[in-house]
Image 1 (cartoon, rainbow, N blue to C red):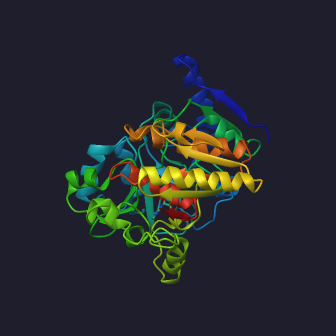
Image 2 (cartoon, rainbow, N blue to C red):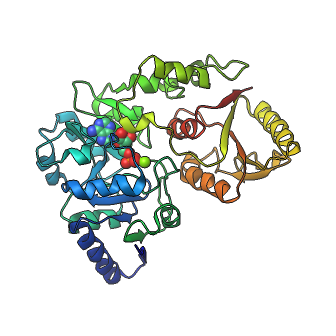
Image 3 (cartoon, rainbow, N blue to C red):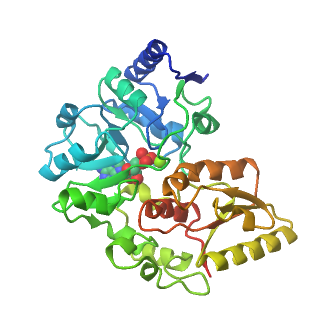
Length: 386
Ligand code: AMP
Ligand code: MG
């Protein structure tokens, strides 16, 4: 299959024609990748079971990992859910269009192929003009996971989509770099108390300002997330078990125990190793000075052993690393920049064919929580505490 990449420009009329063509493909049951404000999505008609199935095929996605249905206006929500809890309505008023996905009980209209066999459906209204026009033109309901091969870092540029899916889908809409760079926050409204299933740009404290108490999926809380900082005291308390051997709350041993203990994340997708570069990624956590010292030591050691080493630092620290291929992920002063560049930097290191990447960690109470959640997964929870 030949993949057509259509660049969207400032020519509104031309854009509309391109979006019409893309919408027709979706109505015919084909796949189109398109930009949203979070990451690029791989879209199909959410109400067509065969079309949904094609998404799993193209991505190599496990069939139990449900898709998010994207809508372009509030009225369209009613057809696909059984009822809208008042708190969810408030959330929609506050955060839609935006990087928030909400889980509802699904109606008959939504096929099981789209929900991975669940009786609930995840819904989001993206904040991107191309996405909104496309959804509307295609009939109102586009199922769209991130447009990457399953397990690879999510795409934040059309080029990333092409890297993974060229030849496997008919069309990619190129809207340039995305704004946020991390997947949406997922909140489950299908049970009595709303529950965060995946951290994202919209933080628990932003949610609590609108609807009061929100729970965290216990699998997230037990997992090595700095999340806990916001809810259970200080960030460092959440890392209380950072032990010398790197097998504390952040380490591999405990994450294995978690699985054995049966604490399954409620968002099926959260249980997979995800967002991962080809190289081994290792996070180094601790005070700034010690982290630099450790990374410099490990990089030197790796290079001496004949390995290609990549280092993820920040604008503030990049000049302090003495060997290896050093890249800045952004500035700690503006966390948004770190989120924006995370997936792109992992892909860049893949292209440079490094064997191992050492990265600073980012466990601040704001957006850093979502960043850290993705980084820990990308690293398979391999963290060295210093
Ligand atoms: P992606 O679109 O690739 O960012 O992945 C969608 C995420 O939403 C995955 O982690 C899914 O497990 C999660 N998700 C989608 N639908 C549901 C649902 N009905 N219940 C729980 N999680 C869901
Ligand atoms: Mg994804």
